[in-house]
Image (cartoon, rainbow, N blue to C red; front, side, top):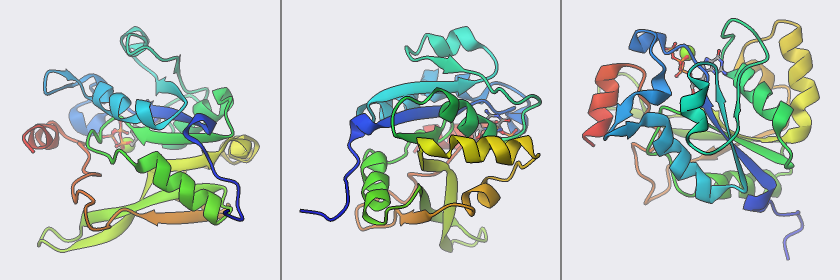
Length: 213
Ligand SMILES: Nc1nc2c(ncn2[C@@H]2O[C@H](COP(=O)(O)OP(=O)(O)OP(=O)(O)O)[C@@H](O)[C@H]2O)c(=O)[nH]1
Ligand SMILES: [Mg+2]
């Protein structure tokens, strides 16, 4: 028997992060852009659904369109698009399970075992945060290195107070807030892991390139 308490999928609320400005896409609502004929964010939500017990969406525009996905939608309580931590905070404010898993709306190919592997690592190391590190092209020259992917984050719901304090004091940096907590980094570069699982679309050109993968 493991010495640590395991984390079941029912203990996790999945939060789809769709609250950004989409400025590199010309200011459109990124999650609603068509991807293979359906909203981009819906692909991410379908991938997330079987991995968690409960689903929520964080969005700041077009709330009715996101509501049609079938999960509760929570806008930021912080004004002026301060960044992904505002989404984390909206999720933690409404999370009724012990853990929250954040997933961005623009990475439709993320792994089907994302939650399980983050949960296993968090439990094994008794961490408060488990964060993805994944291969990314490093220099445009074909080399790849492991980089943190902080918007793919499993968080203990009890971190809400800490995040409230950090953001109320003006803190906006995901890395800096995460660094205040016991964090385990979880590599997604095992044999069999898709090398492009964490490719995201920031521009319309990247979105179309992803569609054709
Ligand atoms: N709630 C909330 N989420 C955000 C905010 N900014 C970014 N995000 C989310 O964080 C994730 C990563 O952000 P980006 O890839 O930079 O997306 P974005 O900010 O919409 O796009 P850009 O404006 O081009 O940077 C995405 O899922 C965004 O929806 C924000 O101010 N509030
Ligand atoms: Mg951004």
